[in-house]
Image (cartoon, rainbow, N blue to C red; front, side):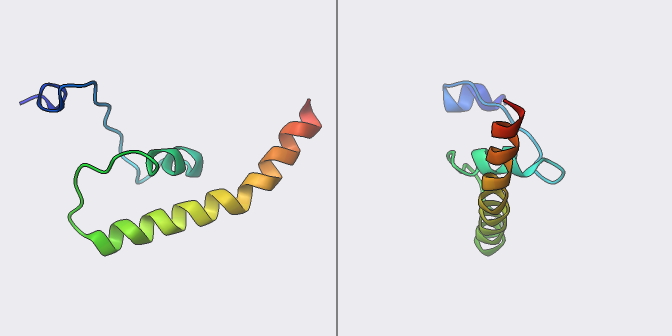
Length: 67
């Protein structure tokens, strides 16, 4: 059965294992549909947000310097 028809809205599925920190950060702000291990999920979210927010000031400065 197609996930889009079950949710009655467009659904896009991506693996987060090898995804970049920015992509993972933005996806963790969305709606979580399934979690087999809540503790592992929360650890992933915490690690992702820490990595993204630690790098954000440097990324912003690099972008500012390029412009």
